Image 1: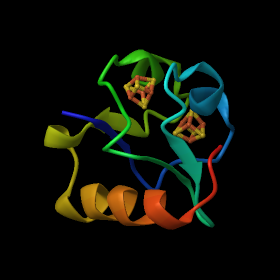
Image 2: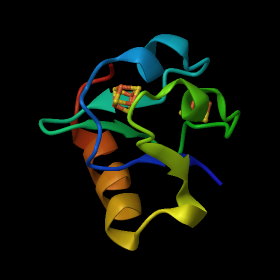
Image 3: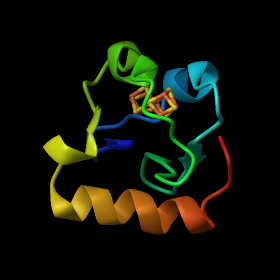
Image 4: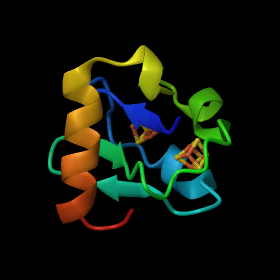
Amino acid sequence: MPSVIDNSCIKCGLCASICPVSAMHLADTQMVIDPEVCIDCGACIAECPQGAITPDSEASAETVQFNAEQAKIAPSA
Ligand code: SF4
Ligand code: SF4
C-alpha cells in the first residue's frame, strides 16, 4: 500500500529529503510518489506540512493514477 501525494502539495521538498528509498519525483504541479519504489514506511506522512500525503487506500482514484503516471516521467526529487 504505497503512499500518494495530492494536489495540496506546495513542493517544499521535505518529504523527498527524508524518504529512505528516494521514491519522490518532482512533477510540474506537485511532488508525486513512485508506487513501485515506495516501501510504505509512512515517514513522509508525518513530515508533510500540508497533510498532502496519505496511503493510497485513502486517496482518490485520480490522485493514485496521477502519482503513478507522473512518477514515470518527472525527474527524481
Ligand atoms: S512512505 Fe516511506 S518509502 Fe514511501 S514515499 Fe513516504 S518516506 Fe518514502
Ligand atoms: S512534504 Fe508535502 S508539501 Fe512538501 S513536497 Fe512533500 S508532499 Fe509536497
